[in-house]
Every structure is written in structure tokens, then in C-alpha cells.
Image (cartoon, rainbow, N blue to C red; front, side, top):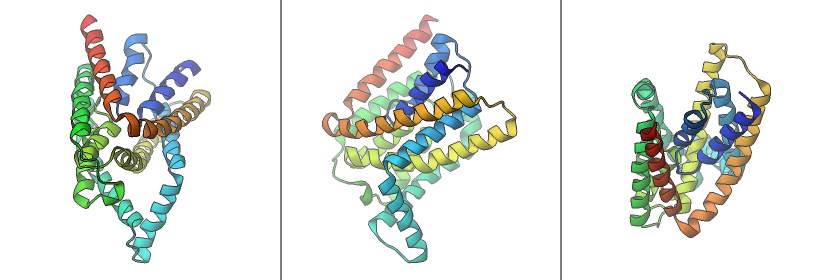
Length: 267
């Protein structure tokens, strides 16, 4: 992998990890259009490290408060709103773990086609538009109940289907449940921490056992670029949705999905 490829792929991953636009739909473009090889396990681990660091550092105050309240709830009986939110995030992570355990191989074999990605990019874009238009926009993330957390968690599990978008699916589910746009995004981003940590750990374990060669330069590029792009993306996404809602991302998804279909049919 060249430094240029590492830069472009890390930039794509960093931006699309937290936007509701599907990272998988974007990551097939370089290989489909430019004929680039698969980036490999080591690079996957690197960009996971970068995006994980970005969301933890951006939400560092919230993360510290949630961790403190979580352990306080175990050892001191803390019943604060932060303790409740921490438990809701953990609960929302469970469906993706179960779904991944039993469905990962099926998804890898049958659902990683470009046609599936193009279809889900469009379908889940329309669902995002529908949820955004009908949402009551009245709840914040601290008002998540166990039923709401599980519902959003199931949406996160469904996002394992390529083209769906993890952030898109979870934000859509939260909007459907009446969360404000900012609260839906924050809950989605905080939910991403344990799931990215688990995914990165799984990929890291596979990397250790695979014996794949590690090229330090491109991997360092992947970590740094994915971190910077993800951090900037989180910051401006939260500002944008408060003014414009989800419509720009819905339009983008529709254009991307139609464009993918046009490219596939032309080739």
C-alpha cells in the first residue's frame, strides 16, 4: 500500500465512520474505480484506532463522567443520569455483539456485493429521511429507556449489512423514537466507542494470528489521517444537523446509491 492510498482510504474512513452515509459504500469506490487492492487487516486496525481515539477525545468529558458513574453504580449504588446512560450504552451494544457472532460469516459470503451496498445506501437513506421528518424531537440521550436502548442497539446490529451505515441506522432509530437530532447523534457516537473497541480488538487478534506483514509508514498515516478527519467530522456534523437536519445526507446517499448502480450497470 502506498502512502497516497493510505491517506485517501483513511480520509474516507475517518469522514464516513460518523456520518450517516455508509463507509462501506465509499470504501468500495477506490477498488472498483481505481483497481486498488484490499487494504488488509493491519490497515483496518489502524483506522479503527484513529477513529476510536477521535470520538473518545472529542467526548472526553462525557466519557470520563460515564465511566465514573458506571463504576459508581456498581460499587456505590450511583443512580445518576450518567450512570443510567452508561448502562443504556452497554445494553445497546449487546445486539450487535450477538448478531455479529452468528451472522458475520453469512454477511461476508452473501451480502458484501456492490449491488447490496448500492441498494441499502438508497433504502436506509430514505428511512433516515422518513424518521427525521416524523420525529417529535423531544428527548435527549439521558432519557433513553432500556427498550429504547435495545431498539437502537438492534438498528446498530442491522448496520452490519454493508451499505447501511452504523451511524445512519442508529440515528434513524433514535429519531424514530423521538430523540432530538443532536441527542440522536451523541448517543450514536457514544455507542460507537464500545463497538469500535470490540471490532478493533477482534481485527487486532486476527492480525496477530495471521502473520500479515506490517508496514509502519502507511499504518501511521492511517491512524493520523483517520483521527484528524473523524474529529473534524464529528465537530461539524453536530453543528450542521442542528440547522439543516438530515436532508443533505439523505440527498447525498440517494445520489451515491444511484451513482453506484449506474457504474455497476455500465461495467
